[in-house]
Length: 194
Image 1 (cartoon, helix red, strand yellow):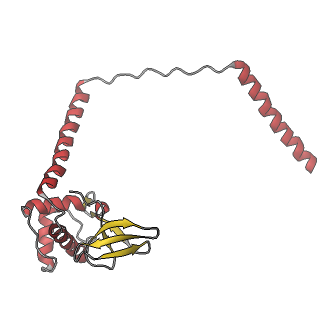
Image 2: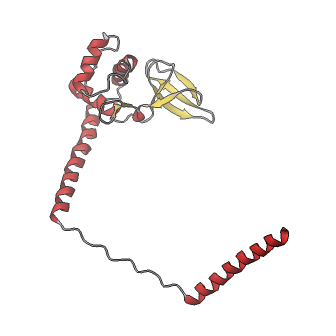
Image 3: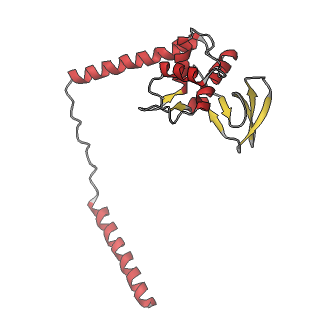
């Protein structure tokens, strides 16, 4: 699932797709009504790729939650954000049982469902992309397991010590007295100034 270029702007309803970038603003298109408007640096903009949900362990990326909703709903829309808050919370608890209910506000819970349905209507959530997104995770997990097993079988090899370059003794002697002369000159220059 690729959410690159999809943003939320504080104070404006829905989600937006970044269309173009100007000198002092960006042009965005609403996923609700497809109207294009400028967004300025003074607007509070959040990229959906960067948003995560507070949990009692480590934060869960919003993208992963959208994948879980997609799989639960078999590629269909989820409950509306206008549903009763208790219904939405219980749905979220099924998918993410350890989400921090004190730090995830009711408005945040509603946004999750609203955003998911907007992305579905815009056709940005597709079954093929979801399967591809999950496939690398499973492959990565198998690869990490293989690496751990191979490390356990092989003894750690010692790295050879790197050869140190030998300094030219004539150059080293020439540098040291010059540094000493500079400090002496500075000291005498200061004593004359007093």
